[in-house]
Image (tube, rainbow, N blue to C red; front, side, top):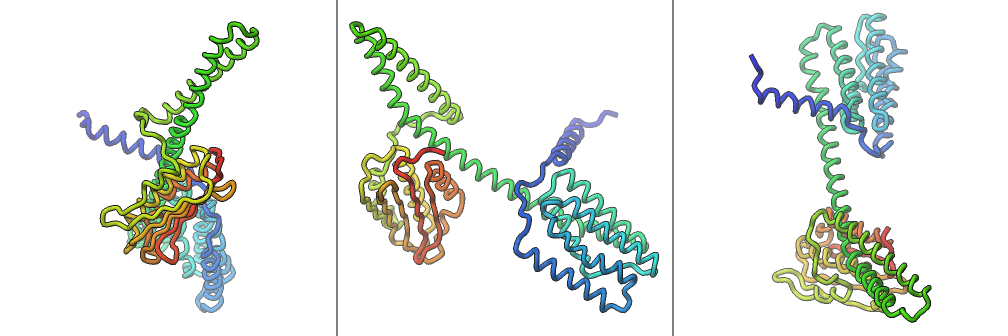
Length: 390
């Protein structure tokens, strides 16, 4: 009898998911150590050594001592999850086997509970095939130890107990991957916005060059032929540059209709001042020589100020005022946006808005810092006057 189409489709989906998981690469940039790794290892090793020395019923103390110091391997569980899992579980299984042969009793150290960290490490940091192979080894080791005592109930209960840390590691890994993809998307969108502004700024000048070159060629009839050839080269280069630039920006826009509104700049920040309904009042102060800023820098200052004000309006608790200050300081332009909300309560720029603003500042060779202040939240950006996209 033919299998239903739904069953066949479900089988293909499951098979594809398994193949995809098997090919999953290791998690990028795993931390080699974190601050609590050392205290954890010290407690486990010292506790295991003391247990070996003080327990009168400890079979084969020499072997027990080796098992007691084995948790040192946990220091490498993030960067080498599969070898550490095989080694640590292998030491426990081998030690237990030797203890049974020599004394007839299983080797059961309290410090061995650390092996529960290994399924988590496999699924959180390891490659897909490492997680599968490592988890198979873990379950086989558990089954071997429990079956040796004839405790088949422990086998059934222990399998979910060992799978739970692995499931937790997989869930945290999925969340971290999703967060990273969203962060990368925000950065990409910020780059696209910068590309639009680059087009709006540069295309105007390149178009003017092409027009000037065309006019020069028309009026150069009585001039030396070298001038005509030079104008032809200028026209060709300018037209080619404009065409390539438009093609690049069109690709970046992903089919989006181009914005026809004029590009915003520092002068437009003053329009953001005033009260917004029931929200805090916005005060804007511009000082220093802000004329002649590169258009991309002016647009970046405006966008960062606009985003910071929006975040303050939405998230600053009990705020009555948002102060925006732009100061030209030599070759730098400094922007500061702060609100007078409850101390430590303004968290509006702690998400992807901050990622986008930081990316925009970095692309122009500047920096951006944001965090709680004595009152509310403060965003500080410093950009060079003639910032160049990275």
